[in-house]
Image (cartoon, rainbow, N blue to C red; front, side, top):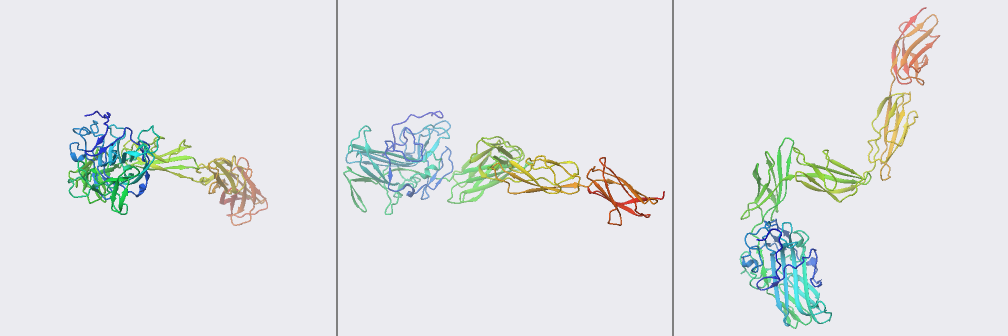
Amino acid sequence: MLPRGRRRKRKKASALKSVLLLVITAVLVITSGIWGDNGAKADYIVPMDKIPKLQKVGPMGDYGYPLWYKDSKGKRLELCLDGLDPLCGFVAGEFAEGRLSVETGNFHEEAFYQLAGAQITLPSGGDAVATFALEAAWANELVQDGDQIVFGRVRFRVDDLLTGSKYVITHPYGVDEFVATPEDKDATQIGGPGEIRFVEDIGVNGGFGGATKSRIGTFLEWDTTDRPIGYVGNPNVDHKIKNGYHNGTEEQNYFRIQGPGINSTCVTTSGTIRNCIQTDLFSLMGKEATTAGVDVMRATYSQDTAGSGTIDVFASTEVDKQYTIDVTGDGMSATTMRGIGGQYFGRVPFTGDLPSQVIVTNKTDTPNSTKKLKPVDHVTGTAKYDTNSDSLIITAVSSDKLNPPTLTAQGFKDIPASGTLVINKPEKIPPSITVTSSAGGSESLPVDVSTVPASANAGAAQTVKQGTVVTLDGSASTNAATYKWEQVSGPAVTLSDSGSANPTFTFPKQFVPISFKLTVTGLNGLPSTNESIVTITPSPDNLTAPRGTFVSSTGTLTVPGTSDVFGPGVTITISKSNQTTPLGTAVVGPDGKWVFSKRSVSFVTGETLSIVSSSGGKLNNVPVIISTR
């Protein structure tokens, strides 16, 4: 048993009983394309996109690999992992013994969902070997969790060819053309001993779904019904196959080589082909999947401030029939999830502390398939970059309201308790921002780029005392870089700074409203799309005039009073209450006092006065005392 992460000693080759299969090279091809180990390149006569592809990747299995893959015809194969099972195709000494464990490092260097091979001995005595595999291996050739990879492999090794000559290889996964290269890499003689060394590994770096882009899209199987139950064939018995690529006329259930110097003929349904050799016998391994399994894509909890909690669980399995999927956990009653077509959902209430894990079981499987997952909070939010204000606005909330966790915008900083983080003039603007929660949740928020135009806001209307200093307020304007205030009505006044957000002016001693218009310019230099107007209304002055005095002997009326809007500029108009023609005016002095006096008037007992200020104050029915002295 190997310690975790220990490198296994590399064998020269791994083979099925009857076929030479060089499965893992010294350096894996960490690409999604094609690689030939001596520079051989394939010219695809059948384009890659015309070859059927795998339909689906199954749920995750116990060892960090998909439980199964489904091919273009709907057949599911699982990894064949029993080193002592002859139908798994392991060669003695080429597999891990005892209890398999990724944690301890005791696991096979490679294992297969499908492993197929064919071998031809050329008339010259040379060998032609083909390998077609859907293979599970380790990215760095170390048994270490997280390094699991699965890829589709097409491999050819043919020798005793003519250097520089073209050869066509027809096989169950297409038709490829190659130019033979020298067997001796230092040789350059055209027509000398040549070979084809070609490996195509697709899916190594594409996640477990990467293999679905390979040419291993249809699983091969014996063409008769006498294959071992639960397997596509017996790797120890060379046999005819089916399910090869259909070229419009037939399935290509053979391995054929055509080209100069082959010195053999192929008899086909369409005639005889010279300089051709082929075989329809394959060594074939593949184990049919017996369970559908189950995957838990998400288990997120919510708690309100009263402590009431629920867990939302999303699970998936195969789509071929209706499955019974249950979810349970500490403090939770077992609940059968609802769903169809392989997608299942369950909302389960919990009481007390948050359960440490949820347990999801596919009860239709025999034995039952089970997955466990720790529930985390659900993070939701938005991310927006405003080009006008040059600001990045990130909003996010957690589903845990009882114990609000810390939310962090990765690459930036924690999000405030308000739920909104504003970053002015950010150094970077990524296409998406991942928000993580201290409660385990995470969400990737795409950054929405927008231009929010500048918008003017001249502030709320004000009622002010005449003669006082008034401050205008444009600070509620959004995305404003510059301000422009203009007076649009009322007696002319002078603003302290018409280009600031908060200019001031002194309200005149007049009872007339004054209005101002505000426009702003955004940080991008564009003017606001609106004009905002605010009106400043003066409050009327407070007048006092206890009474007037009329001296009948001289015909003189005298009325003293005060105004809380001090002169100069404030006048008082006096009229008899029952008349519209004024008797006259008085001027308010700098101390706020005023006196009205006029001769050659007449009053009778009971008549009153109406007093009106130019600053809006009014007094009605002011009594007049008549004196005869």
